[in-house]
Length: 272
Ligand SMILES: NC(=O)c1ccc[n+]([C@@H]2O[C@H](COP(=O)([O-])OP(=O)(O)OC[C@H]3O[C@@H](n4cnc5c(N)ncnc54)[C@H](O)[C@@H]3O)[C@@H](O)[C@H]2O)c1
Image 1 (tube, protein in one colour):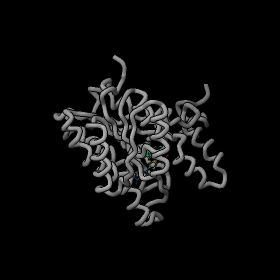
Image 2 (cartoon, protein in one colour):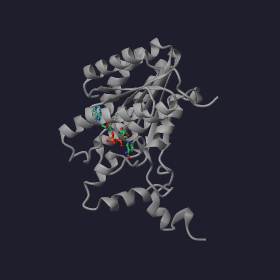
Image 3 (cartoon, helix red, strand yellow):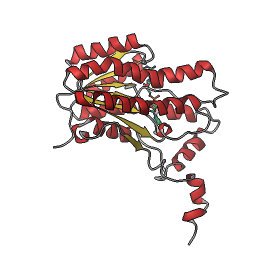
Image 4 (cartoon, helix red, strand yellow):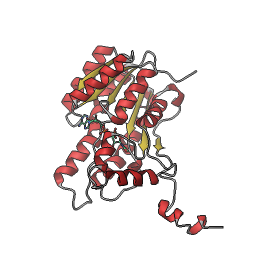
């Protein structure tokens, strides 16, 4: 048996670009019909036209994951158009910065509204369709910040920690309905989100170099490397995996004390 999604229908939120676009393409390549949900109508349409150009069955449905009614309309539209729903990949997300004092209430609410409430809204609207299909799989895109904190990112870190809780709740509550839920935790991945964050610095290239060094493999990741992990967890090959968090981070979470500590040759990795 090889991984495939023939006869399956997948919804990918945030599918217009970055990790979501790579995930939509991977599902398409593996035989799924793919519905791309995104608030960026122009990029979303472009991405779907590209998928269709590659011969995949794909559709675009505009929605803002902050707004449950727009999500419901988009999910229902996708289900009507494709004839069901088996897989949901939650890739829509935003990055905002600030410590717990500097983060304004507005930024706090926006970050949680997209990154956490958005996953809840999509789950609420999609789950009944998965149940009706006799089962399915959900993959939520967390972050390494689902289990550790990175400085100056209080709202993002909080939202990304919370999605692990949502993942485990879905896994537990819907296991008997043949629905699995898992979370992937990417390190730094080369997407418009990461480039946008780097561009906040006067020296974006230096930021990208520092990001690369933060991963033991010495580079940042590619969107399709996350997409493949999502596809694996959504596939029948992962049939006994639910409620799990999977780091897709080039080893970023592995070192104790960080790379500077290791490279300094102190402690257990000192010069011999
Ligand atoms: N790129 C990274 O380094 C990285 C690392 C860890 C986790 N992540 C997570 O991966 C996910 C995807 O990130 P990315 O890097 O591909 O980002 P991206 O900005 O490149 O793409 C995100 C997509 O989500 C869409 N989106 C944003 N807010 C939305 C909303 N309210 N409603 C509907 N669509 C919305 C955007 O239009 C865009 O198409 C996010 O959850 C992000 O937090 C990214």
